[in-house]
Amino acid sequence: FGCGTHIATTAHVISKSFQGRSGPAFLFEKIINYQLGPQEDRVLVTGLHTVSDIHCRSCMSLLGWKYGEAFDPGQRYKQGKFILEKAKVLQVTDWEA
Image (cartoon, rainbow, N blue to C red):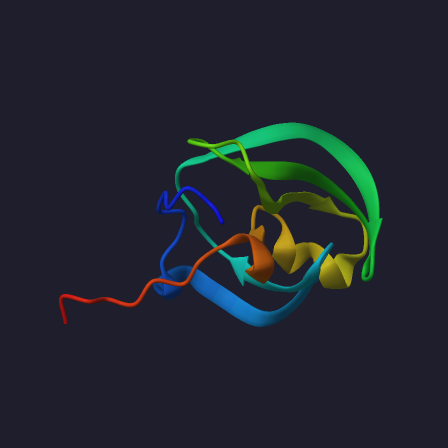
């Protein structure tokens, strides 16, 4: 599954305990090689957020979403961060090490 395009590194993982549409997900502070969909308001487990879907720039697979605005002040730390769904990405170990 997936095209193998590099999307993120473990150095940018903020949390491994998030929930995506299809199950476990990771919260990242930075990702690369993605295309952002239009913003929409979405009710998530933690309340109402403005989000944009994230697609792989190479194969256009849906990978997760980017948080735009969080309406609950306690959730605003997510603004500008990215959710990558664990089922949609491959973890590659550093084979040169």
